[in-house]
Image (tube, rainbow, N blue to C red; front, top):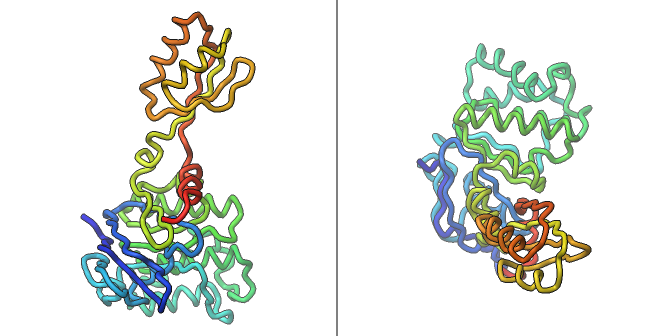
Length: 302
């Protein structure tokens, strides 16, 4: 069942097309990576899904309801990329205020707030004022407020911004916990290695349009590079290997070969051995999400 759906969603500001007809669906319990360069329309799309911006055209639904519906929003958590919490509140008071806004009973807030602060690594700073927090601590308390109401869907817009490697690992662990609890996570991040580790599905937008989507395996399929170490390699063998894929760097018995399918590897080894070559090493390397992302961005206009 899709908990987030869009159909030809579009947003225009005057002569500027921010989102140019985006269609996708996010299943329950998925960690969904929403990627794109700056200005691709990511934040505008998130704002339309949350009912903060009215679309120019197209359809969207969140938990089966229209964006902004109070019944749906009570079941959603949101960490925006740019936030500004009241600096005079303590971390404990901030989460308590958000819990009250959600209508959580006092007893539940009293149990939930300390547990959340501990979960994001701020248990010992519960009584500290927000104004004394570093950027990384602000990010942590922001993540905690997104989780106060035990949401069914969490939107995280650059959740690891300003965090050190330990903080990013903590966020990864929290996202995994949310997924194991059945919570849907809609993640926008520039840390592509984090997305690659945590996400089930990925969608890449560019110039307000969807240019790639699918699981990580689907996105990297057909993007396999193989390093070969071959004794007795000559120009005729290199020319023969070009029939399997694109030959890259060649030097002193080493070469790289770009393939569409790893099923070609046994045939490549057989061909080389049949021609008298000595195959010392075959190392396939599937393209990373960053490789795919950069290739999409460098292709030119969407």
